[in-house]
Image (cartoon, rainbow over all chains, first blue to last red; front, top):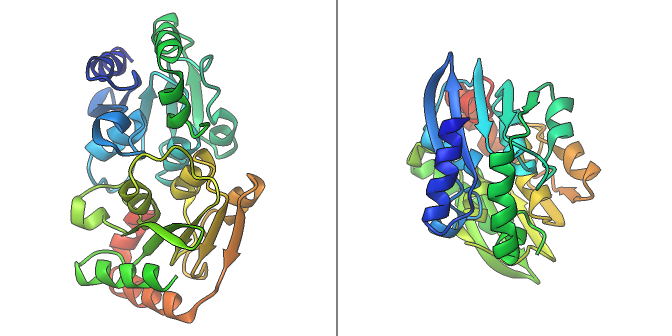
Length: 140
Length: 140
């Protein structure tokens, strides 16, 4: 999760939305990424999606874990379900509820670490950039 | 839907998976795209996702219609739900059941045109490329 938090900070430095993600298997990092919607003018690039993109084509996602500093939304959760990523570990879900129930209904194990570092990063960002955030989650 | 079918054919000519999509509003085309997983080594790029990417950042997706030659999978359906795209029109769902029920449960209007042209394109592709297809939908 520390690597995902560093990714989130990189995103913030780039003028983007501070959410980071990591894909790992057997304790080894497969890929990492952060929200790039602003940077690449690409609505798909939530942190989890950037991370999955950065891993390239994989035969399967067996035994992988997707870490994200924020509970995944329906798009990212849909990718998790479609590609059969078995476990999601989220930094927090207070600033955004996400699609936790949808993940669980589809047999994905979801762990919420409820980290104040992740929450504070998002709270601060949302306070300064409410419109950008609402656009990111389709609520504008 | 004809434009989406042409997109699917373009994908096939490029050596990719023949699925095409169009995003439209008030009868006007906003963007189009086809499955680019093979072409860009990018697991996210199902046709619907390429199409949403090609539209760039949008304030909202109010009154839009997403056409796809194939019923959307959970990832693409998740994007539809997250971005609040109200209507999905699919070419067929015989070769792939997709996430129709998930879309409907989340108040997305889903219309299946059940077109033999779309079905035959996919049947022919899957017969020739079973592994590529299974990887595309996370079943390898």
